[in-house]
Amino acid sequence: MTQDQALQQFLQVHQLPGNYLSHVERRFSPLANALAEHRKEAQRPLVVGINGSQGSGKSTLASLLALLLNQLYELNVVDLSIDDFYLTRQSRQQLAETEHPLLATRGVPGTHDTKLMRKTLQALVSETGKVSVPRFDKARDDRLPTTQWQRIEAPLDLVIIEGWCLGVEAQDDALLSEPINELEAQADPDGKWRAYVNSQLKRHYPSIHSMVDVWIMLQAPSFDSVYQWRLEQEQKLAEKTGDMDTHIMSPLQLMHFIHHYQRLTEHALKTLPQQMHFLFKLDTNREIIEATTPNSVHLS
Image (tube, rainbow, N blue to C red):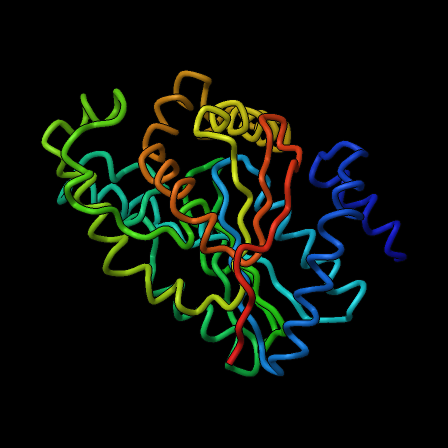
C-alpha cells in the first residue's frame, strides 16, 4: 500500500474530513520527522506522550504518527491509550464501595491500573519478544479479556501513549476545598472523592510520566469545548457498534460524565502548555491555530 492509499484509508477508518490532510502536511508530517530524528539521536526506544482534553483528537494523532513513522521512516511503532489501562468494571465497583461511589466511573486518576501501565511500557521498550497489551471496550465500559489483548513484538523504536490526564501533576490540597461544578457539589460535598483522586495522581502517576521522553499537547481553547467534542465521539461510537445493548451515553449522561474531568482538565490547560516539547493550540472546531515548541527535547 502506498502512503497516499494508507492516508486515505486512515481518513475513512477515523471518519475524518478530507481537509485533515492539510494538517498532516503542514503540522504532523514535520512532527513525525522530528520524532524520527530524536529516535536516531537517542539510539534507543523512545516513549512519546500526548496530552489533550477529551475529544481533542489525541488518539487520532497517536495513530497517525504511528502510521507516518512506519510508512516514511520504517520504524517499529505502537500507539497506546491510557484508557486501555482502566480498571475493570468489577474493580471499579469494588473501589466505589470501599472509597467513594464516584470511582465507579472510569477516567480519573485512581481508576487506572498504573502498575500494569508501567510494566507494559517498560516491557515494550526493554524486552525482546511478544508483549501483551490490554485493550478496553468503551462501548461496554470494561476491559477486554486477556485472550483478546494485542500481542506486540518488542522492543519497539517508539511507543506513543495518549491520555487526557497524562502528564498532569497533582493540585495543591488547598485548591480542593471548593467544588467547581454540580457533580462535585452534590456527589462529593465533603471533598473525599477529589482528595482521593488527587492523592492517586500524586503517588502513582509521576513514575509513568518520568518514562516519557517527548511530550506533545493538543491544547483546547477551554473546557467548554469538551462537551461538544465528546458528544461527537459518542455519536461515532454508536455508529460503529450499531448495538443498543451498550454503555454509550445520552447527551445528559455525557454532561454528567465530563464533569468528572473538569477539575483536572482545567488544571492541565493552565499548567501543562509551558512544559511541552510540541504544543498545538486548537480553536473550538479543533483547527490548529498555532504550533510552538516551548521546550527543547533533551535525551540521555
